[in-house]
Length: 121
Image 1 (cartoon, rainbow, N blue to C red):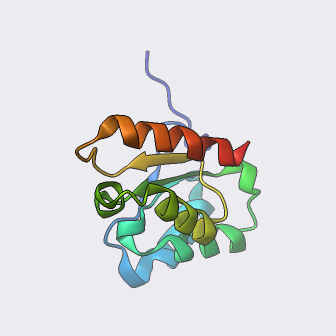
Image 2: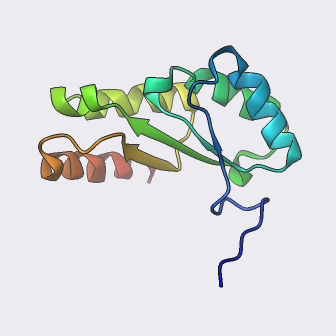
């Protein structure tokens, strides 16, 4: 049977697509009411606001699960590493990094993602 607890990083999270100038306030409110998973992406151009909301929430970083995504443009141009570094710089930490779309060479992308995973230790 499916069970979910809003105070876990489980299946309930906040997506930040198209929040624009409301990203910070929406993330802060979500964290205040119990969300602990925030999904963002480089494409959404709001990773800094997500990070600021988390930092200013007073909630321990270890309690919050952050998902971000590598944009297709970076995948197709072979700049997955650069995109990952940029997102990591903006967010401070990433718990789950996704390819926003698979691109034309999923094996190469997979190999780079395995390398990136090692950055976090």
